Each structure stands twice: as structure tokens, then as C-alpha cells.
Image (cartoon, rainbow, N blue to C red; front, top):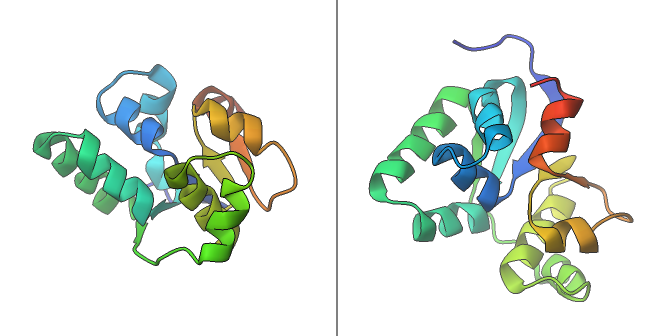
Length: 142
């Protein structure tokens, strides 16, 4: 059932949020999966690639079903090096730097992540904010 009221902000879910939501490993991640249609969700290619490496084919099928049902946007654009370099210089590993660079480049409002490196390194000074799944659920009453 599609919700007609979409919150007008672009959200990117980190790989771990998708995995814990799909595998039902975290109640807050599960709540986010159940409410994807309330948000403008964008998935960077880096996250999609990491999901392909970490989920079974059955769980990947479920991921794509969630994407289609919620009108989540898959983005295959390569992140410009200048953004990746900027986030690597903050101490992030390459994959995380690509995700952070993508968010900055595409003007994502919020990254939802349990990744301690994101939460520690990206506290301020960027276009986007980083929230844990619990903080995100509490903010939007999920």
C-alpha cells in the first residue's frame, strides 16, 4: 500500500541498514524497510554493489522488490574523484568514502547508518547529516 504523504527529503540508507532490515537483524532497520514509501530514498551504486556481495540471491530479490514497491531510486553514476578524496582524507575507507562523496555530490539530506566511522567522521561540515537507524525512527515516529 503506497502512502500518499512522502517526506520531502532525500535519504540514503547505508549497506548495513539494508542488510539488517532485510535479514530482520535490527528492529529499527526493519521499521525503516516497512516505511520506505514514506521517503525519497536513493541507493548509490556502491551500496548496491556491497549488497550483491553480502546477500543471498533470495535476499537480493527481496531488496529489489522493496526498491520497486517503494519507488526507491537506484543510482549508477560514478562519484567524482574529488568527493571520494575529500572523504578519504577524513579517515574513511574507500567504500565509505564513495558513499559519503555520493551523498555530498547528490545533495542527500540524511544518511542512515550504524557505521561508527560515518557517525564519528562525518558529524558536521557536510550537506548531509548522519543518523543511526534508531535516531531516524524516533525522528519520524516509525
